[in-house]
Structures are given as structure tokens and as C-alpha cells.
Amino acid sequence: MDGFNTFGNGIGEDVLWGLPLAFASEEKALEQISSMSDEQREVLRQKSSQITDDSKLDELVRMVAEGKFE
Image 1: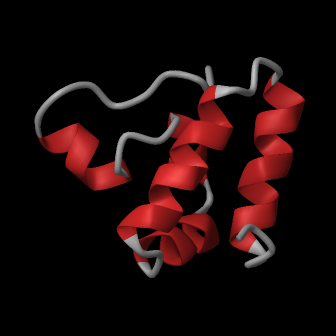
Image 2: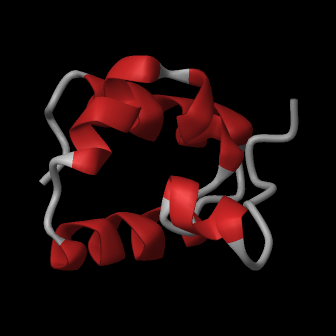
């Protein structure tokens, strides 16, 4: 799976808040993201958009799932 693809326009973007698809594969990450404020999600979007390596994106997803991303 290409973790850097994001949902496009419309419904998909609302479902994952414009974040990479890699977050969709981790239920706990989705739970954490859903409880974030809009500002926190924006920080996460910016951080994830700067990542160019799948392993680093996986690490970010893991951090979010564990509640370690602020």
C-alpha cells in the first residue's frame, strides 16, 4: 500500500481529514485523530506531508496510535 496517497476531494477527504492513507490502516490512530482538535489535525497534516519515507510515515502512524503525537 502506498501510504502517501491521500483521499481526494469530497467524502474521502472528510473521512480521513486529508491525511495520508497510512492512517486508515490503524484503528487506534483513527480513534486518536478523531479526538484531536482541528489545530492538532492540521499540525499532523503538515508533519505527515513533510515525510518522504514509508518507514518514517509508519513511525508517525504508530506514534499517533499510541497517543504520543502532540
